[in-house]
Length: 94
Image (tube, rainbow, N blue to C red; front, side, top):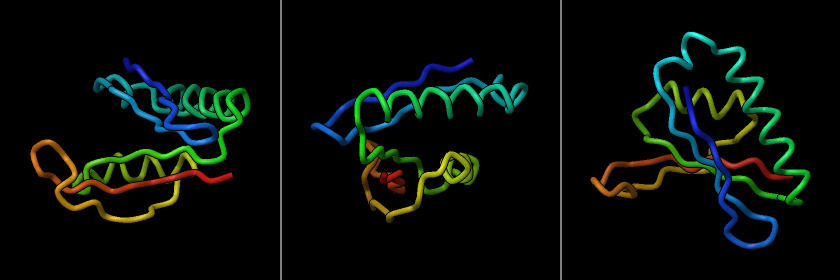
C-alpha cells in the first residue's frame, strides 16, 4: 500500500517522504491514522522541531494531504524536481 519514512537533515530537522499505491484511496482513514501516529512518534522520539516535506506543485491531492496532516505551505520551489518540475515546500514546526 505504501512506504513512509523520515530522514534527518541535522538535529531537530527532518524530511518526511512517502511512496504510495492507489490502494491508499481504498483505505484512506486507516492510512491517515497510521501516518499521524508514525509522525507523532518520530517527532517525539527524535525530538524534531521541524518536519518538512515537498510535493509536486500540480498535485492537489498531495497538497491537501499534507495540509490535513498539519503541514503548512511555505513556498514554491521552481525547477526543483529532476525534471525541472515545480514543487511546494510544506513544514510542521513545533
